[in-house]
Length: 107
Image (cartoon, rainbow, N blue to C red; front, side, top):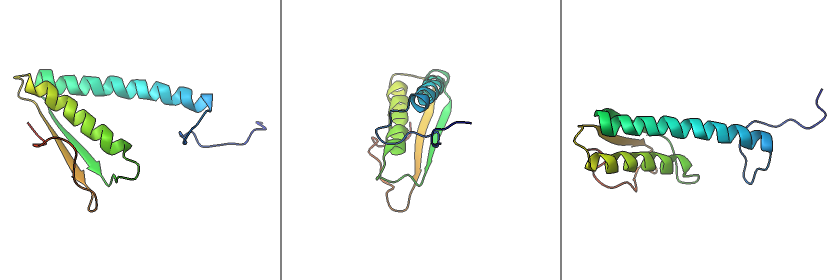
């Protein structure tokens, strides 16, 4: 049995645990590859993307920032494309619904 204290397999602030960081780096790579495929499908193949964000506040803005980054990447690509794709961000949060994304939210 392990004699070290157990801990959750989640990233904590200023984390240095190599086991956790290695797993997170692998998952980050997988997510970024998936995101690139989705964005390319919207821009090149005319797909419709809806980013549905539920209850993400401003205290830890990582999810909000990621949603807006994906939206902006798609809208930038669509501005140069004739594919007919669309990207829309729907933010459901009664206290913090505003977006830093450019208007309109869809193309």
